[in-house]
Image (tube, rainbow, N blue to C red; front, side, top):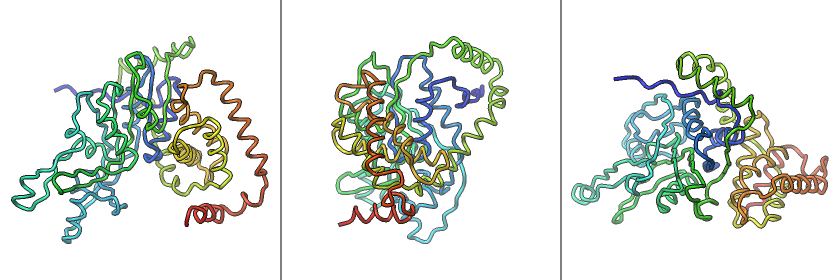
Length: 371
């Protein structure tokens, strides 16, 4: 049986910086909610998705769990692990590579969410759950090529799980839950039909990719692919240092992302931008904040900056505009920059109310949210 060649290195992908950034930020914080990559064929969409999975560091899991339960987060454990723990069973841990699950367009609801054996539950009082795709993808990557051709109901299920981080299956009064936190990557060619606006909005981030036109970059693409095809393992080794560097940066960012702080000025800046464009709902505001924090963590900063918000805005808003992606990106981003500068001016760069100790500022934001 022939062995599959190593995955093409993520850091060897030429150009497509916006796509790579969106993928990396989702890897830093899976709670962002996934990314939709739209573009013509042959632009490296699936290559980037698979390369990201190979790049990410191993994770610690409970060995007895088919759901890759995180031993450090018992509040997220699946029902089966909670029950074993309650019975006093000893739980062991191990480390493994994250999963990369490729969801076929023909996938059904049962295939995605899993199934409960109702007959066994009624006759024997045992809760038997057959895991589905969401279980296999937990803490890994769920990749859906041609997501626009997938049944809308199934897309809804995927987006629900990506947003909530849990999969709950209920049948005949019996329920089973397990963690379902994953990086959802959807790719599509708009020429084959678009997603409904309601589904578009539920993808956290979206990027458009096009074929590279620069002669030098196209030459780099050809040279690297020839080198990879000639000696996949050698090519992989040549990029190993770059892969390890980026993988370590993502792992470090994951450790500090929850500690990245923000102030009321940052929230006001985000709200000003989304309200000016009349973005429906509040999902975009939340995604911008999460993405900005992930970008700050990746840069090793403990507090978000306006540049983090700007980048997050560019990844979050275009596919939510009622007119579709920016018709005139330069004009739109120029207006965004103007509004951000205005907010900074209103609050003042040295405003004591916003530049007090980070801990005190974060506490003020939390208190404001309480009744």
